[in-house]
Every structure is written in structure tokens, then in C-alpha cells.
Length: 149
Image (cartoon, rainbow, N blue to C red; front, side):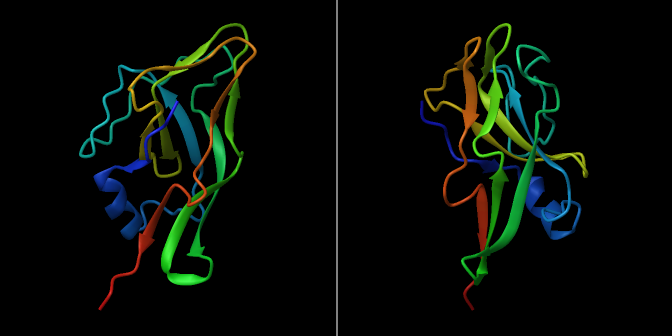
């Protein structure tokens, strides 16, 4: 299974810029969504979260994230998840089935970005007793580079 890149909603860029989203201090979560969720960059309404049960809890998992310069390079800021690593749910009493993951700012009440979990695209399933893992790439979830002048 090859997951796609994290894709930032258009409004997220403005929300970060105007302070609606505070990547340093707000509560950030990751939720799973079914194949009936239809993400659009211009529509930040998030629907069709995986139902509560079988090891998944509605509202997802709270993440510990950083928003910091990349290796001391002040011209490049990186948003990264440091815990849990990987983001993990353990299926219990049945399967967990999802097609998308969404990273949310629950303090501001807005989604930040989403990821297609299998670029085929196909549902991803963790069967009873198995784990549903999302590993964040070594380069982080997303970054912002400074502009050349």
C-alpha cells in the first residue's frame, strides 16, 4: 500500500497566516474517513468519519506536533508529528476500514490537510487484532519555504 502526500486545504494557508490555526499550541488530531468522503481543496467540510468502534474512537488520535525550522534553516519551517509514531489504531472486535486520513486543528475547529491512504485508490483495512498505522514521512507533514528576493 502506498499512501499519497498530505494535501493542504486552501483555507488552511490563510488560517495559518492570520493565526486562526496555531500550529505550536493548538490541539491537533488525526481522524480516519471512509471512501464516501470526497475531499476538495476549496471545501473544508469534513464528513464520513469512520464509525466509533472496533478499536477506532470518533475524533481520532491526538498528535504531538512541531512547527519549527528545518535543521536550523530559518527559511524553511516544517510541520511534523512526533508522537505517536506511527499514528496507530489497533482493531478490536472487528475491522477498521478507511480510505482517507485527515489532520485537524480541533482548537480552531478546522481541518489542516488530508491524505489518500492508498493511491490505487482502495480502502485500507486492519482486521481484528491487527494495527492500522500511518507513518509520517521523514520530511514531516508539510513545510513552508522562504521566498527568494
